[in-house]
Image 1 (cartoon, rainbow, N blue to C red):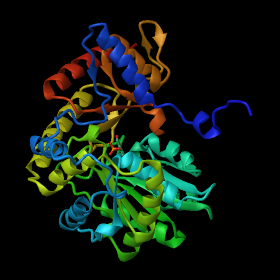
Image 2 (image 1 turned 60 degrees about the vertical axis):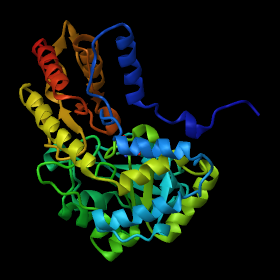
Image 3 (image 1 turned 90 degrees about the vertical axis):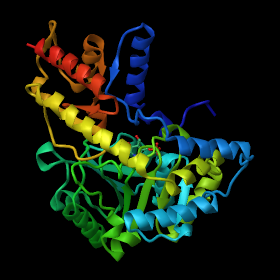
Length: 399
Ligand SMILES: Cc1ncc(COP(=O)(O)O)c(C=O)c1O
């Protein structure tokens, strides 16, 4: 047999964000003052009491394998947290802790997909979803939405995309890359279509704590008994507690799905990091003021980011109310010239912006948002203001 690479891995699109990060790092190594508006993580440090719990776990020798689905005290705490904070009644056995929401999402897809099953992806969507669906043997079915419809599909759009092979939909609210928060009517519509056509709802709620201007995050599983029964709720510790490097996420759902995910996880990763689990226990059971403090900072920054974009002619966006991204439609600027070169695509826009203005943003294309750039405002306001000046100067040069 030739020493080939599997078709699954050959066909994975390498992460655009990682390629961009490499370019940014190259510039930084050259001593250049790059401002990154491309980050997918909070710039805050993990709160001290969470770090201390992790350190304590090391000192106390809690450094061995744990139960596959997580330490019982964390699953219990999660079950209580989901009830008190989200209004979701999940028994501890209906929860599983994994190595980041990312791994948990893949586990959920592995648990429910048969080869060739279709998964609906309302788009723009996180660039990992289609790859994960394919990695789990499924077929991603992208449901395109526009800025004018607030990046939320209509009932007709969703229903048209359904076939007898539809097994699931992946929802993500608050959304990466748009920052849009789905309202109750939209969520009810999804729950109704899912019920009528009998498919799973995978609800990625990783940004649930980061909502602004009085907006409310509604877990779709809270809407009805039927929605609860067919939803796999996914979230984690990365964004709300600034714990991206600890790699800890979770799912909650029916016992059957969670047990299947546990069986898969037992052979895929074993258990998530023991030390991170003790830190997460402190995160869930400790003072939640740190979450609110960071949320408030992001709310300020969101307003500052929008003020930056408002000052640039030709840029439009659907107003974000959550996460820490805004998807800026720059299509009206494409086709213009920058220093003699015609700027054709959002990808080239991002490259030129990095090269000449030393500001990094992520092109919209991999999120199914061509003509757009995703700006993250997970940086302090001073740097944000400086980034704004640089973007404005860059755009003023376009002819
Ligand atoms: C929409 C979405 N889901 C999941 C994740 C993954 O989170 P975690 O760090 O818990 O794996 C991210 C991270 O960027 C994300 O944007």
